[in-house]
Image (tube, rainbow, N blue to C red; front, side, top):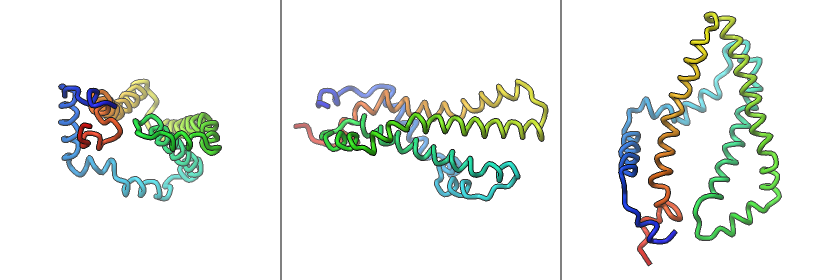
Length: 181
């Protein structure tokens, strides 16, 4: 990335992202607990409480494994699209048999994740219908709306970063600290 490309003026989107990110950093501890590795690990390792949870614990284990593998592949893909000074080492890595094998099985991992998630969703739905209130479409649409309201803020922050600060980073976060040549 050239100095001219990095010399773009800061606009309102840069300011909105900076204020939003700063606000997130100073939020109360209860919000930070949503991102707590300690709490998440404790929730993953707690013993199943109900018979259905015990019966499907191994399926949940496979789902966690597929999420781990999918996240690992996505992280590696991120390295491939990041700006670099010397991409030869990364090109060599992507040319290895292991990476070609990973690329070949990746669609299978995604399908496995969706299949397992669908199975667990169906089991949870049937348990809910059996023990909870009668099914109503309003409950369904309320659940879908709730899901989107939980996801959209995180996607908005990522989108805002992409359209504001990411193009200014050049070869990484320390690009801004380099003196112009």
